[in-house]
Length: 414
Image (cartoon, rainbow, N blue to C red; front, top):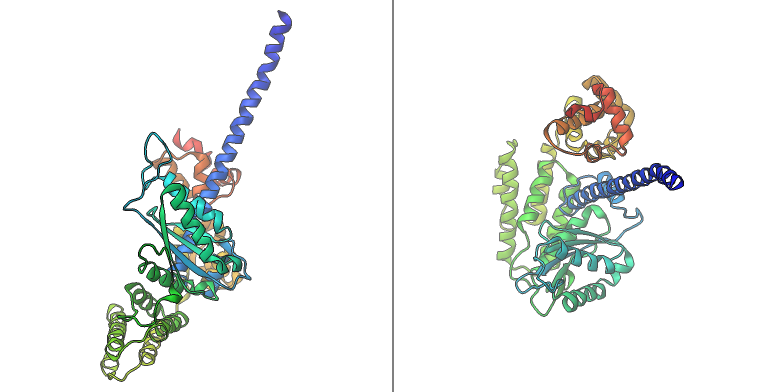
C-alpha cells in the first residue's frame, strides 16, 4: 500500500508536467495559426493592390512580389478569374443535409481542388465564396493552364456537382502590369455560356460591337493622372490602344465615342482637383484627333499634378502609413525607405528632426498605444494581442509593454 501511494505521489508532478507540455504545444500551434492567418491577410492585401493597379512604383511591386513568395526571376504573369455557377449548385457532402452554398466547407472544397492543380500559382478567394482569382507565374502551369482548368472543372462537376468557369487574361512580362491581365480575365469570363467553361481573352473575336473603356479602366486613368504617375499613364494608354485598335476593328463612330469618354475622364481630373488648365485644349480637339492627342494632354496634366513634396509633408505621409500598418511585422526602416523612395540614413535624420524621436521609438509607441487600447476595450487574449500589434514573439511584446507602462499587460485589466 505504501509503495502504491508513493508511486501515485511521485507520478503527480509528471502528470502536471505532461499537462503543461500539452498546453504549451497547443498554444504554440495556435500561435502558428495566428501568424499564418496574418500572413495570408497581408499577402491578399498586396495581391489585391497588384491586380487593381494601385501599386504605383516598381520598387513596391517588387516588394509585393517577394512577399507573395514569387521568384524574382519570374517574367510571365497572367490572371485566371473564376466564378462558380450558383443557380443549380448542390453540395451534398453530408447525407443528413446539404452544406450551405456560402459556407466555409463549400469554399474549402473549391480552394483545395484549385490548389491541387495550380500548385505554383497564387490563389485568392473573393469576399463572396463564388469568386476565385488565380495569379499564374510558373511557366509550366501557364503553358498547361487549359488542361489544368479542364481537370478542375471536371473534378468539381463530377464529384461535387459544382460548375466552375473562368476567363484567362493575356500574359504580361512584369508583375506591375498584371492588372491588365486581370481586366481582360474579367472581360473574358462575361462571354462564357454553357457548355463552354473557359474563355481565353486572346481568342475573343477582333470584330466587336463596342469599344473597350470600362469604368475600372476610366478610374485607373483618373487615379494615375491625378497622382502624376507618368509611367502608369503611358502604360494605360498603350493598353487602351491595344484593346481598341489591335484586338478590335472599330468604325469611326465607335472611335469618336471612345475618345469622348476619355475626354470626360480628363475633364473630371481637371475639375475635381482645381487644376489650372485651359479646357479649350480638350474642346478644341477635332474629329480627326487621335488617341495620341489625348495621351499628350494626360501627360501634361500629370506634370501639373506632380507637385514637389516638402520634407514635412513626406514625414506626415510616412506617419500616416505607420499608424495604419503598425500591425505588419515586416514594417521596418528599410521597408519605409523602399516604399517612399528615400535613403535610410536621410529618413532616420529627417524623422528624428521632424517628429522628435527616432523611427523605431515612434513605431513602438504606436504599437504600445494600440495594445493598451485593445486591452482596455476588448477581451482579446494576450497570445492574440501581440500578433495584432505587429510583434513576432510574446517575450519582446511583454518587455516593450512593461518598459512603456511599468506593468505587465495582464495588470491593465486587474
